[in-house]
Image (cartoon, rainbow, N blue to C red; front, side):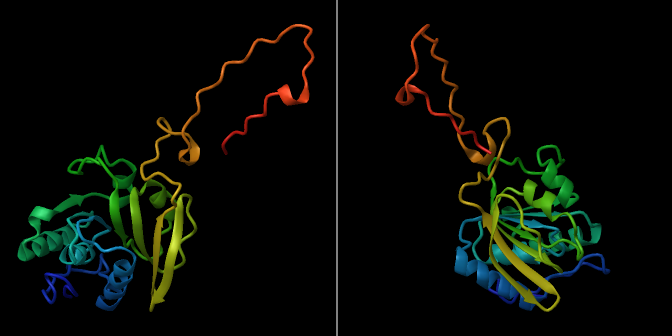
Length: 228
């Protein structure tokens, strides 16, 4: 396993011991980053490598110019490989390694020990969960990123606030690229904004009725449409 392109092109990567993790094949990784490069350059972007395994995806992004990467993984062997790879390649100062269950970390980023403060969403998320992963809806609901690359064995169900840009199969791996819908905020908050990111309009006080004054059609206030 090696870095495919960028400043660290050709450098070898250590793979985790055992069969718990499944590193993305070089051919698939190259195809993914070719697609990403055609959509948006990675220069100076922040990247999330979720279910990071060896860290090869996030490291590839750093090699191609990403400013920083957060690697989330719970397997001890994989964490050792990530840290060893980052150290060998001199990337420690641009990387954060988090030992956590990816779904739980996404659902409560502020509460997880060692997680960086979520001051802003990630620019790109690289998501490669175990095959037959069945929690895509919840994951995408909690994922705060502008663009995401999803690796799966089966089609990923459509998710609210995301739109699919591309989807292509490479052998047993289906790669789907999605982005936040233009009208969807990256960091939705029920307490701060109403559904669909529509700013709330202050309620207009009712005008007292004038006794014995008949209403005419052009004076009748228009019915206000609610947001759904």
